[in-house]
Image 1: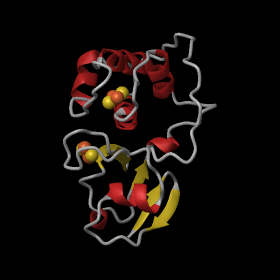
Image 2: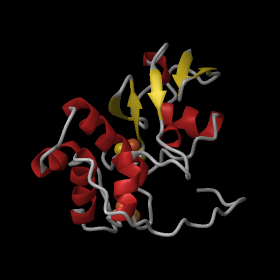
Image 3: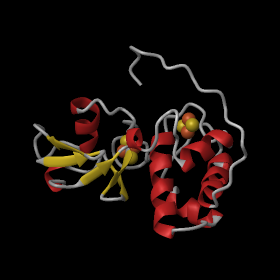
Length: 168
Ligand code: FES
Ligand code: FES
């Protein structure tokens, strides 16, 4: 099976019943997609498949030949974050960060689909299947609404130190 992952072609050696989550994390080392519940309930493994959010723990490789996959690693760079990433930072919408990649991708897809400002209830619906143990969700909703409106608070949390050699 051939996948286009973050714009690059990847021919997987995984069997057709292996999950996309396995290919991303174990073959490609893209550990942004998190292995949470691994049965479709928590949203931590969410990536974009042909632009739409999908639970990568449930997406079988055999169904994805030729699909275009976007993971959080392709959303932005530390020096050039995406608008949604900036908003999460400014609104303190990430704490431990385990849910954050899936939230960012689902929010990015929502804003792109809407093509303009989104309402709070639309964010609730789009992120309803994403669990966060840390934030209480309010700051996440604030961040997504602000990003959709192009609002910037103009302050950023200080960049975190990159710790190498530690499995995310
Ligand atoms: S790890 Fe896929 S939904 Fe929880
Ligand atoms: S920030 Fe910790 S689970 Fe959401």
